[in-house]
Image 1: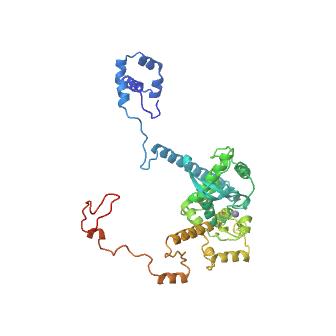
Image 2: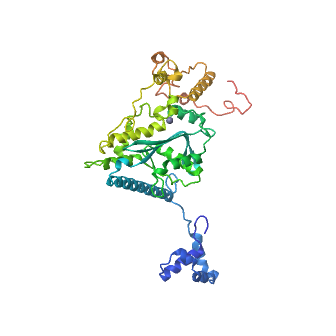
Image 3: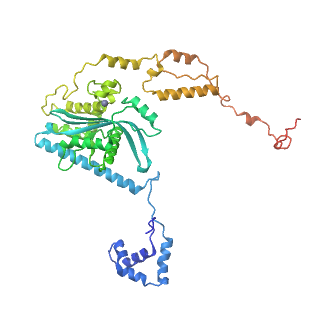
Length: 442
Ligand SMILES: [Zn+2]
């Protein structure tokens, strides 16, 4: 069959044969039927002409597309895949939690939570997906009774693709602060994948590895975890669905509901999502990794800090219901006196004396670009003054108030342009001479 899936003359002949005979045989099987093929072979060109005409007039099967040009059937398949994934996930979580509850060991039910930091993301057009360049991966093994049992932490030496350095630096500056020039050894993605498999192996259920839970409703978090885990799996030559990334919101809601003796109103995953987004332990000190402690920056964005505080929040909700006595450092963040040096370094970022420091989210690169633009504009127009306006600096704002407007309108409003008031000029040789000739003076 041709690439555009256009039906040939033989197809129309078989279709007619099936209609006439009233047979319910599948058209594909009928096309392979030796009896029908033989009949077609022995037909004269005159008899075949009718079907050849049908072939010529038939339109090729065109794929239905959306207004954006996307293949509708492909979108439908994707939707079905997502629905199947969501159904499997809910079934898994419900079974796991209900079984643990029935066996009276919900507080010992082990689960794994993951968070990943990245340097930059880029769209891979050929795969129609967004790829995240990993920076930090943290997985915890935990249960409500014992707290966090083990931690898997991996910092990744960045391999930044050409053209993404600025983005990597900007993202790092505004979040985790891990420098783009950092070196964390030469561990390959394959080795990291194997390490993760080993780490979660104790949670193996039958022949399957346990899923990893993360915030699925936070698109940035879920997409980065999925992309990074897919890259590791592909590097190891393993299927990407071997380690499933499931919803922590769903697990949290399910554990909470199961922990209650009498359920008055169901705690939905949406409630879990709202509680998790409140992030009460965001600025707690002492739960971040050693690297971030030494870095003294980007601590709330440390992957280890994320997974730990998510777990502590779940403990806040379910410990009491499961008769687990909350212990500081196990079910809640440890009480660690904050180092004054860290406070000092944070306060330095807040000083307004230096415009570079004042805008902590502004990277060196963006400052350099601003300076370069300012220099360029000064060359073009010496009268124009380029200044970076700091809204927090009153002196500059005051200066701004007293400044004359830099530009004036081209003409006063509600007036017609000068062109309208010009008398009609005749386009003759006198007024509009040919090229190379001067206009005659009257
Ligand atoms: Zn960290």
